[in-house]
Length: 610
Image: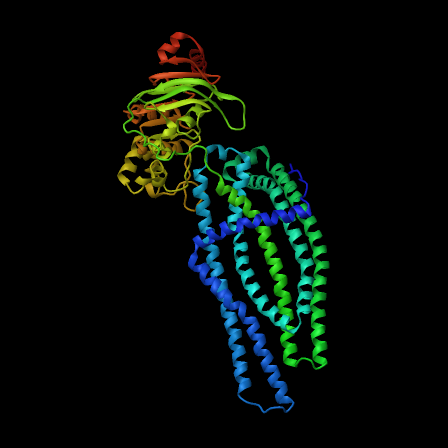
């Protein structure tokens, strides 16, 4: 298993991509400012002052050396002036250290603020996207890169601050060199360009490689979880799967490693050669300054100043190019982050969407509804029509893949029909506010969530605003029989469930399902959808749950999906789905008398109990 290599982009195309990616920086900087404006402002002020310290120290050092030379040669007597200059240089050095520590503090605080801000923003945006997005592997690659970039790109943000500081320092030092010799400054700049181009080129190749490796890294993450999780441990041991999974992970890991090493070797060779050019440029300029001092055209203090200025300017100019290149290349990564935030849900509330009616008076109606999942051509629902009236309980049966769960997704507006309409009280569902509509619907899926939180929080997930309402949570637990489970827990409603966190207690599948049923009771929705609600329950627990089924659905519309005909038969009407259409409908007695598909499936299931 390995990702296929894509052709690497040309050198010129790479540069064009870099410059196009620079447009990503302003929106991200706005996000940085929003995450901590005071911290950002403080950091920038500190960097401004820190940028001026190096040239100030060099200037004072020049005065000190010229003073020492003058005193040593007898040109002037020793005065307190030299000690004041020394004190000034020490003060500047201390100031530089304190400014550096202040900048580090601001960077650390900003990193935490930005990471928290981006994590929350990504969670909120992801929650707005359609269910179809979560069923698309390409979306997961984009989401994964967005998550990583929201954390990793804090380095780019700090680099922007460093770039400003380096630019100010380089400008002041370069101005000093320019006054002495403009050509000297041009030589310094020219010698740093090759190293800059080389670093930029390989940084871009690193981005391209990282982009191509994303699907493989996701496979590695999946294998890592699969090879060491509670859910897979039993089968891994019984079926001896661990060597196979480990070997597959090793193959993918070697594949990634070999690609990274190949690029690192090329980068090392090229960078080493280009760095020699920069070193030659620096020492050439330094040698020229020494020559001028030896010939008496500049003082020893000026030589010291120039040596420091050349060294500092060379280092800062290289740093500017390198930092700018790093920012430009990291801006390429920001493309995925901003594209993620640019994604918009296709299923969304219209401006001024209607509130869902309460009470619902006419019910739901599927009017010639057809549906095809995005990216496929198979017709899951084919011109389907039926009604669900207030107080009515409808059950749906049929083999897997006949569209039962799809109907649930359409009712809850996780998807919109490909054609046809779904009406609520005679109004198209698309006219209602989605959040208001969902507030009137309670759903228990077969693959319900097991929240590794306290028992009370698990139940409160049905209507989270009731989290602090202990009496309602206890009532819901009693109705769903979850109270019997909770009473056996050491901390009862405050007991942490699951094994993910220390002190948690795991439950059986049936016990978890009772917690999910409790969420349905708490929700007090007008439409209750039960998708295989008793799949994990034993026969006795199932009987007890459905003894209370009438109470659970009293005064509500109920849609029940189940493969257990003992459950289905208590519905007011049963719909038999075949090929995305309703092939039979009626109550249990009517369908048995019909002797069709329903009667056949019922007899097949009943025979296994005889």
